[in-house]
Amino acid sequence: MAAVEQFALKIPAEFASRINWAAATDPLLRQVLPDARESASAGATDPVGELSARVAGGLVHKYGHRALLITSSACDIHCRYCFRRHFPYEQTPPNADRWAEVASYLTEHPEVSELILSGGDPLTLSTRRLASLTGALTAVPQLRRLRIHSRTPLVRPQRIDAPLLRWLESLPWRTVLVLHCNHARELGQAGKEAITQLREAGLTLLNQSVLLAGVNDCDETLAELSETLFDHGVLPYYLHQMDPVQGADHFVVEDERAKALVSALRKRLPGYLVPRLVSDPPASDAKKILA
Ligand SMILES: *Cc1c(COP(=O)(O)O)cnc(C)c1O
Ligand code: SF4
Image (cartoon, helix red, strand yellow):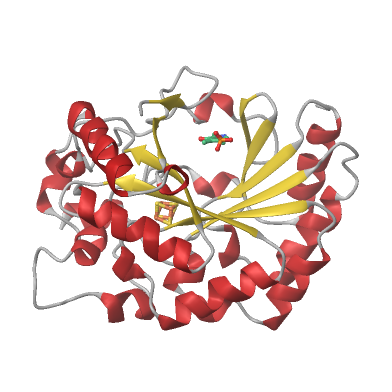
């Protein structure tokens, strides 16, 4: 299938074990199953305008006070709606030369107080490589926070092992982990244990979801997601309107419906469990809050 040639199928065992394989409409299966409609889809290959915001060593500096690092080219799971499914990752190898370039760019930009490790998924790198990155970053005097964007703790919980936890505990910055979970059923026993360990290692845990037709575009589903996450110490952060990436038209939820879903959530949940509905327009210097 052309869709698989463009973006390979990848489903880790833990996520696969949570899919109801008997239902073609299963919300977990839908996130990972290639669809013939992908090839006919409109949309952009760089929907959030990242390529023009690349500065040095795989850094994307689109928002003044925080910079984002394309840390790794790999993910443990391939989400069909991924906005980076066309990203030219081969230009950003995870090696010490690149970390040195990143550290010197940040040192020359004292306004950057937070670095976001993104990817790909940063936790696909070995702990040794991650430690070599953070070792280089200790030379950046103004850095106050490190943020890690990862789907790994829930989709490959065995990655959260003792050496990784020791590395996280050793970091000199306040560290935030932003998970990516779209449906309460993605949280299995092993994933819950992994996030408990991450919380015990001192991380602040947040979650971002993508609003996806046929996956979580229902107020009851979104409420259950927020409540299940919070049961395990994770606060909902963003609910993203999907970036208009080529290949993912069939997941689109119109803005008006998206806003109505968030209003319905406000009636069901305390304010702190309602994520902010956001979009990421290419030419903007901050996320746009829709609701
Ligand atoms: C979303 C995003 C950020 C971080 O924005 P926050 O609103 O602080 O979460 C930074 N850089 C890029 C490229 C982003 O897409
Ligand atoms: S984990 Fe994130 S970066 Fe990786 S394929 Fe899924 S959405 Fe894209």
